[in-house]
Image 1 (cartoon, one colour):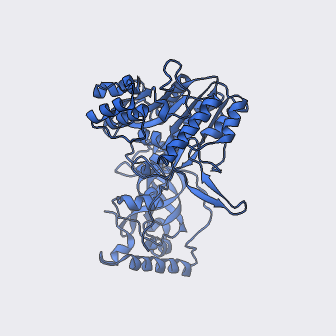
Image 2 (cartoon, rainbow, N blue to C red; image 1 turned 90 degrees about the vertical axis):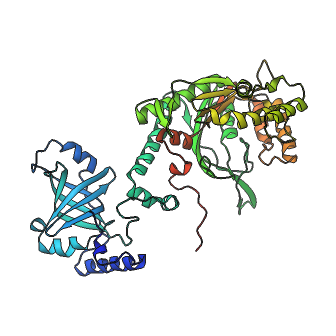
Image 3 (cartoon, rainbow, N blue to C red; image 1 turned 45 degrees about the vertical axis):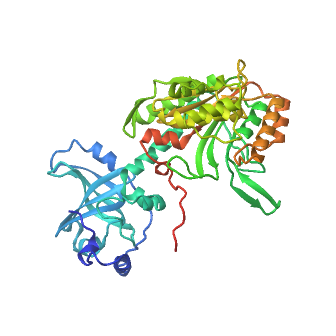
Length: 503
């Protein structure tokens, strides 16, 4: 069984400070021998995963080439004059073999014996295959590159405590290989999204994170203060209004991927800062953006997993089988209630009470329909589903439907009961937009702290002419969760927001 070197001297009751003291003594011993405990550059020629693949053909005890590898010691199994250890690098683990006859007495007994789990070393050695068939590097020399002054957490079993994993992500990455894989997949997903859009002539742009107005979404902003200008500024809650200004300016296809900040609650799907991508295409509508949504999700799945048939939290999901249904029809299927048949708000309120849907007095028919959808339908949408026909009341930036002005040409994309994307045909009528902003202001005065604010400059931009445009926003973190089978958004954020621990 692997054992940490200091465990031979310390009992289980000894605390962390004692183990750290022992490690510092070893650090001092290295310095006394003239060995720098925090070393210098090391020329790496090979990596663990590549070596195991390249030299798998070796016969028992057959040797390969000389290699230089570097990484962190994750296990040390001592057998007197020889020891097998596990070295971990960015590609995984490889076994390394220390032998007194090869290293010499001083190097083996004085230096190797003072190594601990967690130490980072550089190894020069020869590849061979053991009698058990494992590709191994026989160490002919090694350098101490960084002495670990703290013991690794939960020896030999990986880091399991969720709170520690999130607070000290470096430990999580160090000992949990599957976590590294999650974040490698995250990067591949982001690369896939960019490639999909770049190949279709979309231009990636950057817009301000700080603004004098927090617009483009129904959300509470974070507020900060600019000392030189002596004004309050808001961290952006969306990139929508800035990107649509660029469409007005003639950049017909734009997108931005970046951090969004919302001063809201935290749960398995929400973090105060998260990554979103917003995409806008001139001379298009919501149907074009629905096709882009499907394309992005499918390509990302193919690029990262090699398939569009996935399993998320035990549920089989086919990303090639997408349903489209209006919000009102989805509610009617689930409850038997047709809210758009109501002529008055009172009728809608009666319907809502009959099926146990809570609502607020400020809600109109559209707001009550949306409440019914969220209460009775949303969580049931396991398979990929586009919900369309959102009420105008809850869609202040979307174009009204030509046949029914009570609803908009908008869609939301759901998988596993979670919204993954939101898009619509953009409202390009400045007069209608101004009226909707005014209605949002009335809702703010009625107590809706997340209602949109008035953006006069955006109205001015629309007055110059916004071409027919389709827009789309995708929650990148939620897409990563889906494609990595991660239960919480914190599992796909390297540094999720955490409440500080007491001193």
